Image 1 (cartoon, rainbow, N blue to C red):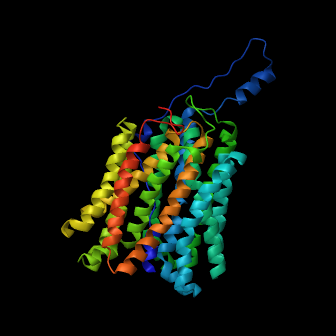
Image 2 (cartoon, rainbow, N blue to C red; image 1 turned 90 degrees about the vertical axis):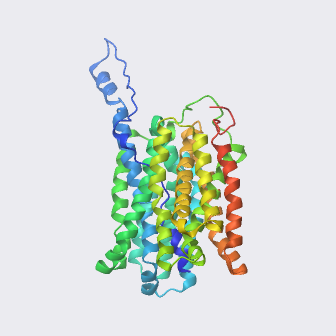
Image 3 (spheres, rainbow, N blue to C red; image 1 turned 180 degrees about the vertical axis):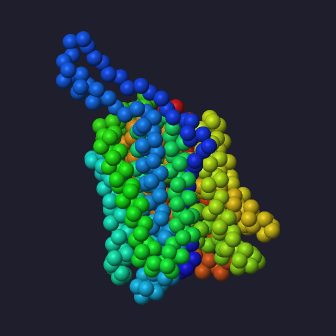
Length: 446
């Protein structure tokens, strides 16, 4: 059961390129005046000038980054001190397992229902409510030290994260349409960096201040994010009324009937399945291949730490106009070579095979987040595509570790499970080629 927690100590991933300070999209706000305009009319007109593009860019970037710091911290924090919490609450292994399974299910549920809710109430309004819910969830599981209290808080905060996972892409598309790769990269990279920081400090904090403060203290980040998003909503307004298409095409097509939408859902889903499976069982697999316990554990760290490298590289290349199709196929191929290396090639290069899979998974996640915005016409459509793909993806991810564990228990070996993963990753190379074609969600060419 402890292995089940390995995949909770992960943040999914993307980029902060060196030229972030130089890539600001430029536009000019217009205000018409006339000679006979009254003083009051002039004042009203001036007050209606929208924020500058530079101000909007930095405000959205800061809000997105602060949002991302809250989306992995509570999950990673729990995974890092699971034995401490288990002992403190007196819960069984089964109850601990439910705490590990809940995030995947609530992520999928949040992704599924968030598009309709955000369309009704607005992107920013929905995100503000979810940040508040996430913060409340972190507080509840710390101040009610019982199994029911902890489970309730976990359900609330992971459901809120499921919403945020889906709605980040349409906000980026709506507010910073000229810098989708850059802002998406910053979002994904923050997920990874925040997860790494929290994983390293939560146990010392629990020893110093107690597990309740070590977990509940991260609610302070939620409060800061809530303040900034409220300010963004007041300053920029709601995206509900701003849904004009950015290209000529069908903006009302159902994503559930779109071939492209299903392709990207499978593409992201297979990546998620590999990611959470490898994060759960990689040390055990390398142990069976003859590595020492210390070396096997280090391979899990290599897998995780390659995420920033992949995210930074991908964002840098996309920003410079490199072919997305080549990047997508290359990222999917990295996963194939990684699984193939574990199965048949030298264990002396265990770090290479683990690193290749870490890079492949992180690059695919980041690219998928970019495509949610780049291959849709409106923010609402981006939200629907993101929700559909992530709902399918997290459901697939939920069954990955369970299926792999079941096959291992049934056969007493990792060989069949690895072979199945290899077949799925080869299929994902084909999916990478399909989803990265220059087409929009309705099948029309870009």
